[in-house]
Length: 131
Image 1 (tube, one colour):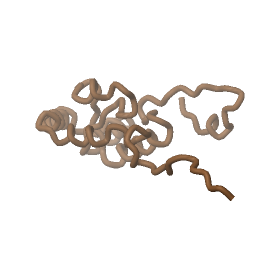
Image 2 (cartoon, one colour):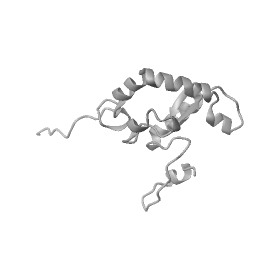
Image 3 (cartoon, one colour):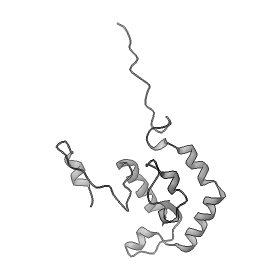
Image 4 (cartoon, helix red, strand yellow):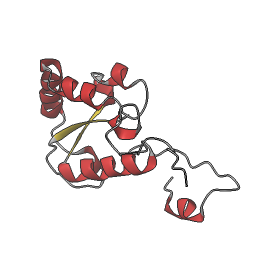
């Protein structure tokens, strides 16, 4: 019996250009720049409360400056230092938003992608979708 090589083994988060790992090294470098550190400090000074918690009537100190439109889209470099693309979040809300972005391809908590219905749309997607 002859063995056939089907293709490279998929390793999540390891191959450049695939999924979440795309541009990861470049983004990590940007987070270490003095420009980002200065922008982050000034944003937290002017927006000290978690925006998601505040919308729910809770006052929770923000610890993270988050990008509203994340790194999953191709134009993230243009928006990285854009103050209008930043929001202050607590660790808990940031974790939930990040988890949701990774599971649904970038929807986040603030602006979920619209659900596109088709003949093969799984019922579980329809039930779990939030407008």
